[in-house]
Length: 267
Image (cartoon, rainbow, N blue to C red; front, side, top):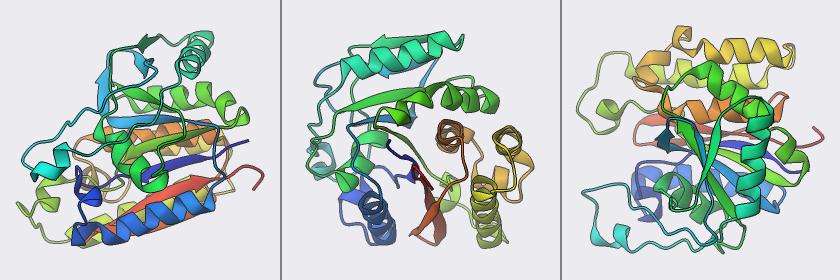
């Protein structure tokens, strides 16, 4: 058995460039990795890849995609030479097909920063095979919950399912372009809603999925996520885990609180 985790990966490559505003976040990701069992392989759902159908990297040695701009030159020399896992990509696609969900394997796609930034902190040796998975470009919450449910059998095969996004992703606030009254309160309210919803042991998974899919009605929901792509990996993870989350790892991006969640086997 392996684990499921939803991680906040930070602003572009900044967690790997010793940015002062990301130091708490960096520490929380390293703590999460230390608390989890080392997996045989990783399936990582990235907020930075959207496709018409669920897609998986199928190359044996994917290159990095530096999908950001305006950062110092060292940001474009970062390396994360983790091997791919074509067999895992094919198996994950087959699980979706069995659930009636269209899927494809893309042998040319590389690893974007939603993958190589958090994994550089969690598994710096780059020796765990990784497959990256896209979001659906429909950004439909229910569809992503069902993706997770279909992928749940991977966890029993010692594959970690990691959703890489951000529990807070209002870019205007993060970049200092807007500071509406109540920003910190809205941020705090949504963080607490996310923790409670993922960790509540009184609900069955159907109820949890229904509540997560209604995230827009959560306090601070649309303020924290004007566009939902950085939250959707959490829905995939909650669906794959099939149980309440076990731990929350808190950090900060600038003034804003952010968090990551861990579902461990047997708890």
